[in-house]
Length: 329
Image (cartoon, rainbow, N blue to C red; front, side, top):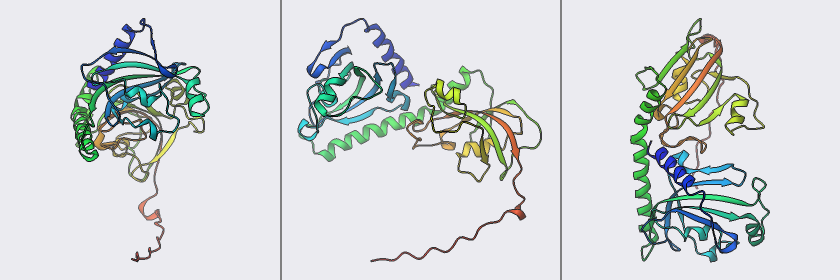
């Protein structure tokens, strides 16, 4: 929950300073500081760890590190190594920041296009807005690169450990907030059966036809659904995707463990909420940039049909030709 609180704090601070005018910088840059920390400003060679929200002047959010619960690390590169660099570009912005700083920057897209020789993006008109909160600055100084990045890695290992340790609290907070009384299996899967359905429970080998919506327990953000209108509302709609009920052959199709176990608790017509800890989901790796590390997930599922799988004697296992032994050279 810590990152969510930080995000709300950043938004509140931004709202309070919204009436302040932006200062003018090089290259059409506009900026204003929400808070200035006491640390010295970063210089070339330093590495910054920061949370960041990137928005367009059309109020579209392009990136938000708070959703992932982990800051981003970025070294400040020498301008000579960056093609199309210019005063007021993203790399020069980092030199204006120090540890504890929070600031908003607007990069002029006409200047960017002229200086880099690249066309203006179609998703914005005049500027891109970057809202930074600098969590840590790693000073390069006389340190060897290996020593510097060892410090960076140690910091992020600690941040990841915090996320891991916070998972149980996120699950409990979700349950309390939604006033749920879930049942819990031996594996740690929790579920609420909202409608029981009828007939037999789904079993290994059966095909379950269902509607679903997946969200993050930490902030209720929807990351996947087969409901087209809900996908559009949450800005995750994929034009090339066919939005229709999905079919999962239990125990045969490659889905997360929480689904394989959870679907076997349901009958045709069942509606349920699955609360899935990360060890039954996407674990330490997360997934697709939409699911953070150690993220507990919530799935709303509706079973439309259960198609019985073939009996064991009807299952034909195709022969797999033997692979040639590897050779060494």
